[in-house]
Structures are given as structure tokens and as C-alpha cells.
Image (tube, rainbow, N blue to C red; front, side, top):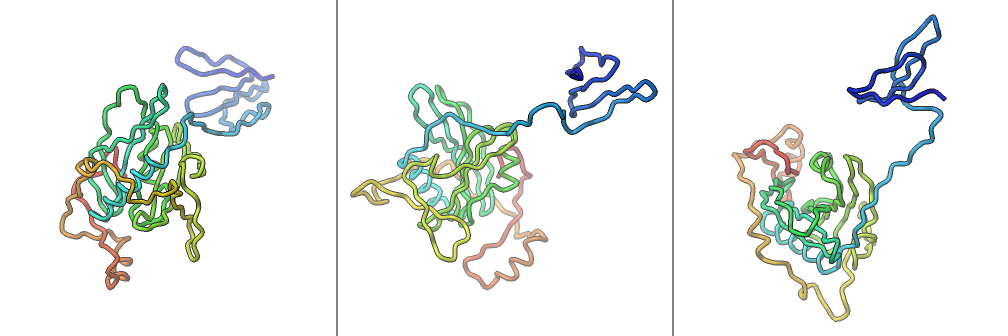
Length: 266
């Protein structure tokens, strides 16, 4: 078998045939006697392939806590027609979740939040954010924002509707793995709706209870502020859509906000 060399600052590449694992990939050093060289290769043919996977050792989120988040997102939408975010902490000893609402500024198609300090006895294990009245999915901005945020990431869409949409992914080292909502959230079920392209879900409440029996801490809303806008400035890719929808009272203009994107923005 051809030797394999891990190339570091303390390592020299020996003479002869060998594979070299370097910072930027795998190389083959080849010497036929008359011809020698080192070239990049895409794989080591004699090794087995690895199937990428990710696991997160936390339990499903309870109906009560997820309902709190869902109702909070709807309240923010009713106030600002915007997205919102909460952070998900987990205590391994008590096996309990803590829902934390960071300081955030919001607008209809995004938000910016200030990551909080760690909570005592809790580990940060994920996030839940809303997509206002749009369907749930993980956008390129979400992927960029969560590139170094390992954990369970949940998007709730269509928060203005009784039946909402969901998208769940586990992220690790900037790799993402889709998850089934029912595996991670207790008390939800798929609701099949005619003419809806995305899956919708609804809550299965405890017997004798209605949505009015559940609430979220009103102090959460104090963490949310509406983003300050300039005079309406329409990016090129929104101009046509806004022109087409200008007679639609349910549409809203897309604005450019004052400050530049920073870490923690969606």
C-alpha cells in the first residue's frame, strides 16, 4: 500500500510514491524513475467512502414551549409584519430547554440580533426563527448566518395562518442535514391542504384546551424593535415585483435599511 503522509509544519514529504494529505486537499507524489511529480487527486481509491451524517443528542421540544415560540412569532408579525428569532438552550442534567429571546431588530424579510452570553448550566443547541407570512425554508442567508453555529435550526413559515410550515436542519461544521418536524416537536401533525405546495402543520392540543390556554412571556416583545428605514429605496430585483403588486393591499415594499450586515443578521 502506498504510504500516507499528513503534511504539517513539522513534516517533510519523503521521496518515492506516497499520498500527501495537506491543508487544501489530497495529493499523489509519483516517481517512475524518469518522471516524478506531485499532483492533486480527488480521492484515495483503496479507501472506503464515508457517508456524512449528524446527530444531536437532545429530546424533542415540548408542545407548550413550541406553542410559546409560535405565538410569540405571530405577535411580532402582527406588530411589524416581520421575522423574529429565539435561541434554544439545553440543560443536560435536568434535560430541560430554555427559550431565550435575544435583542433584535426586525423587518419583513430579515432580522439582526445580538447573540447573548451563555446561560448558566445550559448549552446553546440551536435556534428557531420565523419567515413571517412566507413559507418555511433555510435561505442562503440562514446558511451563512449558521455556518459556525452547530445545532438544530428550525424555521417556521406562514405564521399569519392557522396551519404553518416548518423546515428543520441539523448543522455541523457548515454541513446541513434535513430533519422531519414530527421527530423534534411534540404535538404537531401534518395538515394536508388543497392548492398548497409546501407541507403545513397544526397543533394537537391537550383534551379540553384551546389556543387561548397558552401564552408566552410578554417581556419577550420588549427585546424586539423595528428596523429603521431610509426613504424607500428599491433594489433592482424587487422593482418588477413591487410594480406588479402595487395594487395589492397585502403586499409591502422592500426597503434598504441603514446599517450594513453584521454577524447575527438573517
